[in-house]
Image (cartoon, rainbow, N blue to C red; front, top):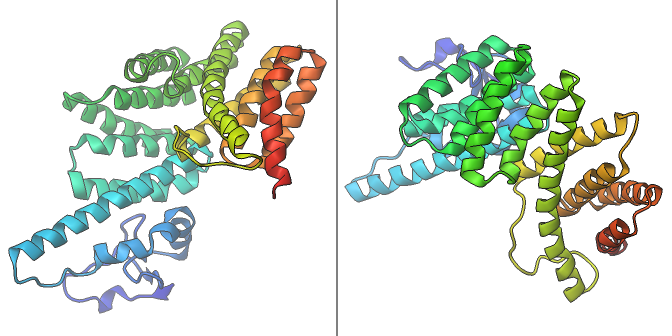
Amino acid sequence: MAQVNPLSNPKGVKLLCELCQHPAYIQCQHCKVTYYCNEDHQQADWTSIHKKICQLLIPLRTPVPFFTSAEERSHCIEQLMQRKKHLIDITTNEAQRMLYEGKHDDVIPAATHSLSLVIDVYGLNSVELVPVYLILAEANIGLGQLTLAEEYLSQAYWTVLKTTDCSNTIRSKLHRNLGLLYSAKGEFDESLRHLANDVFFSSTASGTDHIHTSGGYFHMANIFYWQHKMDIADSLYSQVADIWHSHLKKLVDVKIKASLRTGPGWSDDFEQESLDENEEAEALQILHAICDIREQTPKKDGTKMVKILHALTMLYVLSMDFLKAHESGKKLLHTIEQIPDEEALEDVSPLIKLIESNLSSK
């Protein structure tokens, strides 16, 4: 970083902190187009998102050269817009990924970048702002800053109300975040009402047994769990586990068939449906939480433990983390042996062989 003196700026130029918009006194030495009010904000931004987008900010914040023709100017503007949209994708996806991983402090800088870019590209009243508002709201809920979270959700709510063609996917995410807010405030009945709306809109967009709908079921299950309504919570957790297990098994079966065709080792010979980074992070969050709850239950249900451990093992395989897949697979086999269940053992055997073949090939 390099120190800057605001008094030495050209007339009319105010250097502002990337995170808080206060007067800036520090410059990023790598891109030289980003400024901060103090070292804490510089470090927070670097850890969160700046190290990934540092060089990408240079063409956005460097003065545009003079062009003699309208065609050149138009081409330059179009390129600039594409770069901004690319940065929106990067910052939003990174913020969402960190949110699933529980890194709420790191979410804020990435989402703040995204919000600024979306406003620049789409305007202050655009529905494209809603996903970023929701990420910022959920991060602040995680940090216990409920008043700030409520402000972001209010902005998202009114934007959705004013948008006649707002998608059911966005409506679903809005109600999920409202459900999380009321849950954090201890208003469980209101939380369940919004989560029910989340499931409705998500089901309308994707179907009742889709992984995108499972999050609503999961958060509803958590509320019933906290209220000690264990039968309802257990039923919803089982539904979530079934949805993810079914989805992951379809993806893994394709990989197993490919390995049988090409021999030992990991094969990516042909295109197939796969999990994106955010879906993978959400799956890890949800499946680990359910697994922990299942393990803490005094009377463990072996069949339910097999289902959740099988899903986790498949998830590790799809993310190519074969060491964790091996550890999870050992727990899975041990649980099956305790039941015992020959059919389950036969079902997971190809998966275990795939894991072992990939570990032995390294």
